Amino acid sequence: MRTVRFFSAILVLSFSFVSFARGDFRGPVEVNPPGFDRAKAKVYFPTQYESRERWPLVVLLHGFTGTGTSEDLYMLLRFRTSHRGFILVTPEGTANPPGSISPTGEDLSGKQFWNATDFCCDFLKTGVDDVKYITKLVDFLSRGYRVDPRRVYLIGHSNGGFMANRLACEAGEKFAAIATLAGGSFKNLSACRRPTPVSYLQIHAVNDPTVVYGKDPRYAGGLPTVKQWLLKNGCAAYSAIVSRKAPLPLFVGPELSMRSWSHCSSGQDVALWTLQSYSGPLYSPHIPTLTWSFSEEVLDFLLAHSR
Image (cartoon, rainbow, N blue to C red; front, top):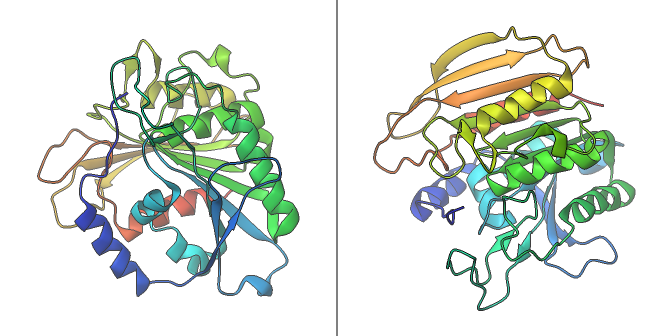
């Protein structure tokens, strides 16, 4: 998979400055569960943290070559912790060592990744156990802070979306709902060790050149991943459909088709938000420009569910 880069640092910084006027937070506190020697995860708390016994926990997983901080500047989740009432943790993947070269000749030096599937993105085959790391991190936070264990959520972007899907396949009982942006999953559902029903939202552009919306011989793209979740959650073929403009600021954006399956035998929900084909100045199908309201709606989906 080609390296994913943030397409406009100026846009990201402008959104982050705007967000300071929209919400406050406490932290970050840097943590790692015992036994892990890797970059520490950052934890952000609502300003009213002491006012409740338990808070939802949102785990944000960055994309390949990204960091927890850069992904949060893109999603702007830390500034919502007080307004929406949750704890946020932004863990870091493993950094490839200096001088690392991929099998295709790409320079991987220092670039962070999650070992999610055989396709993405442990290109040097280190075998690092990121399922163990993230589940231990959730357990550590649940013991040490006011986390509601029935309301733990995953948001993954690109490689982080692959990682979220793998976590659901191996530790789905820990998560109440999952949202992925431009992510994918195992090519075959049979590779999912424990297909635990979990409420799931996939957000994907039909013309994404990095992680495809449709079929790829190496992995399940956006739509095939949703079809896997329909099987996992026991959902009927029928879905409710709503179309409206995607909230992309400053530029004309693509149409956003929203489909949902809420009559699933497992009691869980599945949703698919499809960004239709579009190209324009500073628009990236793999890293679409998001407004405050876009991520708010992702939180609406996640926080409506509990285990």
